[in-house]
Length: 457
Image (cartoon, rainbow, N blue to C red; front, side, top):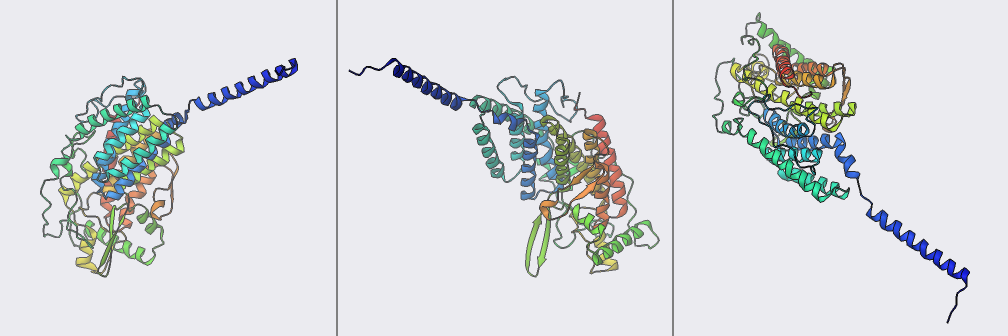
């Protein structure tokens, strides 16, 4: 029988307790709660990311500018509605402010993480409005897996998803009443022969886009024709007429740019092109280039502003929603003017009466000329963003980098909207009057929205 000395016994006991302590530390560290998901969900970068994901799918699916504005606006409203429920002392309800809108279901379950519910509601509504649903679904799955790996509990996840689904369903039911589906069956525009009327343009001679968009229910505006611009100049080839002088201005500006494609005017035109479908013809082959819409460009500017401001998650949601509503109502107002005035594009008359070989720097989009859509929606969006982030907000616009274009610097959102408007003249697709009066129309729309849509308390 082995008898240990007191010293050896003491050493054995010490070793035992050392092992016991080490084991406890290992067990404790392995059971330590993971909380990375909290920082992830509280970071406004997450909401900028989901907005960008939807924008990418809009480009992929080639939605027209008016329809793209619809795809942007409803998901943003869904996310805002949840932020309002989570921060009722900070944000106003949209009930009574947006046409036919009623409050979403109340946020009562304490297990719900509002930011996660807002992301889910946004993606769910967005997925219902696009074609390539699998692109959103794949992104959702990756995001949700990552959050759970970062420590998000099953109870919190399920509660948040459930609430996000309920809000999404509420918003989609409301969206169904905006008359969009009905307009899908309305008749197409019938081409009229007189010179003054819009006609399809080269190279594809596409049919006119959304001639019934003025039937879509506005968000804040009382009607599509609430802010009509002054009448366009009468279309005439009388060389002393204001219209003809503007036509010649487009022609000569186009010639100048054709001779110097590196000019400032050419760069401005290309930067703000924002044509979601530009076709290219080489011999018998044809291919297309996909890009963001004009509204998509301004959604990109929201991202830039939010990053520069190091904005919070909930306030970033508010910024996207305000801008998307300005874009949506801006398109309704502009399209009402376009399809009631039916003004012919410069390219048509220049080719017919002045120079049959002339081409604009930008491809002419398939809808009437007056007013300029980019001018209207850019000013409306700029006013909304100014209301959110303030005037004299200097920024570097990097939105077009992904399309191989350089960056442009602006002193304010209004400054950017002014350049966007003039880009249409430089591009050869609008007369000066359509750009200038389009800015005024957008000013009226944006100002009305900012005065009548209260989000912050």
